[in-house]
Length: 201
Image (tube, rainbow, N blue to C red; front, side, top):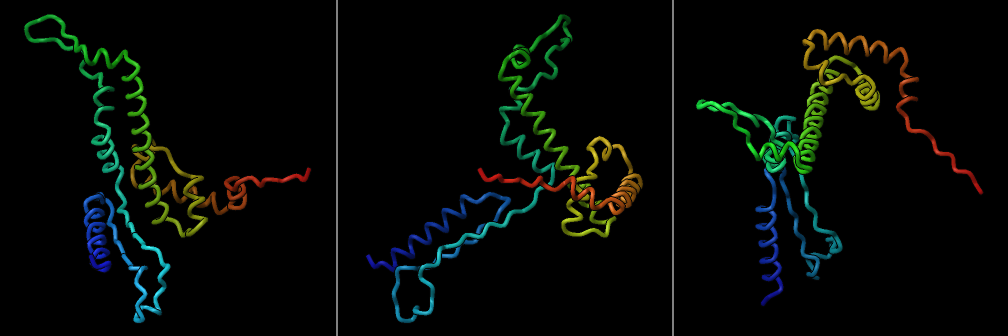
């Protein structure tokens, strides 16, 4: 078989493979270059250039990330479920769901609930970051490294953001911006990494 045709078929197979393997949250652009051809017309091309793949990800919201985790880790939510373990039937008596009782007492159930709590913390952190980044960008003149350090130093808690209204949040940003500008050198020193001193033996 002609090497050119073989390379063409191989490139088609790769494109089809990557088009099936890609997820819904990313796009893959594949550029293929034949590095084995030594044609006079291709003298100006760099034949040692590597094939490149460009992956462009789409940013997901906190709710979308949580929904993906609930689908991907469905068994975790099954093993960690202890809700409605004891019910009162209409005929009278007491009904206990043995699966949920096992989930409550088993090691696997405890580990599943621990992972669920971790997912909840990540969800809260994503919500805080999304809301806090939007607030700090809209109501401060800071840019670059100063904005990043301001966000890190004055990031509010999830509980406060959930219970405060928009005007309280704006006032929080403005008050902390004033404090930041008054003590910017101290804050940058606190957030900087410690310098390592290498001693010569």
